[in-house]
Image (cartoon, rainbow, N blue to C red):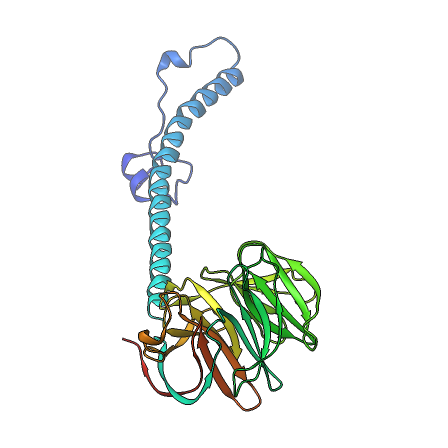
Amino acid sequence: MEVCGSKDSRTESRERCPSVPDEPAREPANADAIDGSDGDRRAEIAMKRAKRNDKPAQNVEREEAKPMRKHWWRSLTVWCLMGTGAVAGTLWALNRETPPVIYDAEVVNVFPHDTSAYSQGLVFDNGTLYEGTGQYGESTLRKVRLETGEVLQMVKLNQKYFGEGITVWEDRVIQLTWVNGVALVYDKTSLKQNGRFSYSGQGWGLTHDGRNLIMSDGSSTLRFLNPRTFDVVRRLQVRSEGRRIRDLNELEYVGDQIFANIWHQDRIACISPQSGEVTAWINLEGLLPDQERVDAEAVLNGIAYDSQARRLFVTGKNWPKLFEIRLKTHRESN
C-alpha cells in the first residue's frame, strides 16, 4: 500500500497526493522554536517557507527569460535578413528594367534653315513653325515658313537674356531664358510680349502635355508646371536602365511620350511621362555631317511635331538644314 508522503509515492502518483511538493521544505527543529502561540508559530513558519520557495521561483523566471531573449534576437535577425532580401530583390528588379528600343531615322524631307539661328526651341502649331534662338544679344522668337526657311515675323530679346526653349500654350507662346529665372509670354499671333513668370534654377527646354507645362533645366529631372500659376506640380526623374539621364535639353510632347534632346549627343530620348523611364532612343548620328557644322557647339537641338499630319521635324544650332524624319527599323539596345 502506498502512503502519501513516502518517497515512492511522491514520484509515482502526484494525483493521489496533490498537496505534496516535489521537494518538501524541512524546517530544522530550532527554526520552529519561537515564542508565541501555536498559530503564531505556524504563521511564521509558513512565511519562512514562502520566502524560501520564492527563491527558486525567481531563478526559474530568470532561466525562462534567457531562452526568450535568445528567441527575440533570433526573430530580429530573421526580420533583418528578410528586409535585406526585399531590398536586394527590389534593386535586382530595377536593374532588370526592359531595355529601350533603338530607332533609326529615315529622312523624308529636307528644308532650309537659317544658319544664324542658334536653335533652342522648335514648335509646329497649326501650319506655323515657331523657333526660339539663343546667345546674348542675338536671342529671338520667330515665325518661320517651313518650306523655304523664310523668317515671317521676329522679335528680339533684351540683351540680358539668353533665349531658351519655347512652347505654344493656347493663344500664347512661352519662352524660357537660361539663367535669369524668367519666362517671357507672348501673344502667338502678334508675338507681342504680354507677360512673364519666374522660376528657380536654369531654363533649357519647354513643352506641354495638354495639362501641364514640362520644363528641363539641364539636369536629369523634368518639372511639371501649372500653366496658369506656374507652380511646380511634380518632378520626374529620367532614367535609362537604372542610370540617370542628365543634360536634358529641348523638349517636345509626341503622342504619349516626351521627346528630349540630350546636350552634345546625336540622339533623342523618348521618355514615359508616368515613370520617367526612357522607352526608346532615336539614333540621329550622321544626320548632319561634321563638315557641315560651323563649330563644336553646332549640336542637334530642336524637335517639332505636326500632330495633324504626324510629321516629326528636327534641326540643330546654326544648322543649314531642318529635317523631316520617319522612324524605322527598331531593335533592343545591348
